[in-house]
Length: 205
Image (cartoon, rainbow, N blue to C red; front, side, top):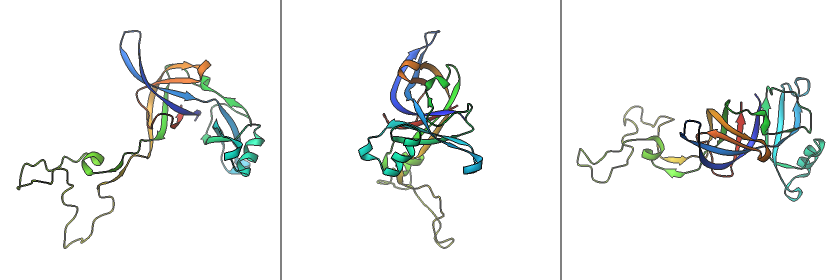
């Protein structure tokens, strides 16, 4: 599956040929350097390792510097493997946003915004008691009963409760590419993608 590593720039909107206002996300997609070529003979599977966003030598380990030196490039902050890449690439090749075409559909993966410790109403969409029956006065957003007492005398795993929300890998599928700006390495996709501004995203087609 062909793809690129990118950075979420932010959201905007454009007008289509019918005058309809379409919300879209601007992504800086690439250019990415092929930092390693995985083969079945050596690694047991075929894949391309791409690197994105330069990293200073001061903040890189000796092992990382040696790894990227083989590809003839500086150290990279973000490295991702893509299996079943559509075109054959060699070590050190540069792949840019031109692999995408306007009108095609892509999947975008990123880490969702962290929302901290949240209750069951926000985290799982519980309705809350709503101060309607049984003399409730301070239990508006409480989870309610979480298990029986005598049997099984425990709370089952996976019970929806309050806890840390967000900060998870999320993939949004079938986003239409509205515009490709090759000179600025920018990609405009319809709708929103996970993550905060300037976070890394993986674009696959």
